[in-house]
Image (cartoon, rainbow, N blue to C red; front, side, top):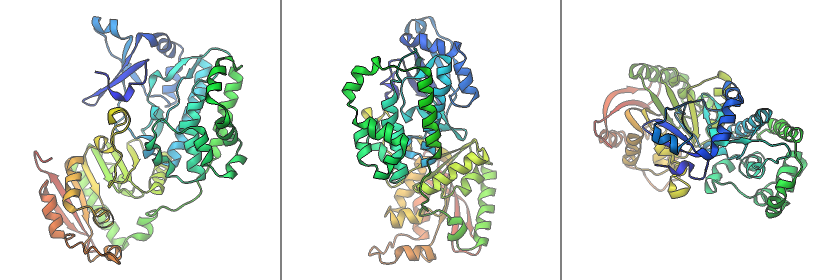
Length: 457
């Protein structure tokens, strides 16, 4: 049955079942798909790590009449969505699209659409996951996805650059992007002095869309002009820097911890528990700068690092790139209001919690923030964690006597009488069995290793 994730695409559709992805190619797209494979473009893009590789499934006689091909793409373990990306991830996605187009036109093809949802991050870098995004290029043909690219990728990146990185999160209120006049109105005057934004956002936004559609086919374009367009865009975007802004929790492990002895002890204990557990996928909630995600990546097949602080995730993504880490994914998300299902029937774009599944959960120095800042009951937190992990959870409890908690409780009317270690253990025991408990050195904080009860929700 066709799923909502690809309902807009007449070229084919995607079905995901039991960790297997199948992309069905319609007969109407046969010529373009065959050209992609025959021309060498597919091999070139896969070699350059710009396009997700796939194999072709054998078709039954009945399926041969219904579909041109059935593709089995390499599985991307965690699909992050654009409103969960950091600034440098957005920037990387824009540059990746431009590079793909630059290569594709040399093989007689061009991207026919330009939505950020066609991209994800896999093995540490941005990659195109929609194999059916290409069409044959004919000399003199304009780039039909140009306006979509400006509305859904270049424009949002400009808003992040000039206003605030949180504009990336805001895209979830309009997954089809914003119109260019809207983007232009929300950019500052100094953006008019950036040629790429002046031409492709401000001027482009004043061009009547209806008139554009009427004249698009008559516009004189050629390979050289398109190549120049993409190369100049890439050159410009590559230089865009986000104004330095420290995140709330940036530098926490360098300046915010109680003592070096506490951190050293914490690292040793968690490392030992990870070694003994042999996790498949670790979900690191409140990852901060990713210190423990990087440690977990040495013992787990996959790690998904989640934090609400843009600066932390942005810094971690750059570390992942620098260290060439291939098994860490990231997501910017607030657990008190996680990304819901969006789009058609709320199923076109999957919710964060439906994608955030693993067999080991890390929640280090997080629970007190959820309880006190977020005012979430401990029982709710335990239930949430049990829904994310299928087996283990390493949870740190920061007691009411901790200086950080005392500071958080200052000037609050709510006494948070339920925030106690006794109640913490009681609530988590509803879903988990206690495997181990460790009193952190030089600190009143404690680490708990929990194993999920059989049949627990």
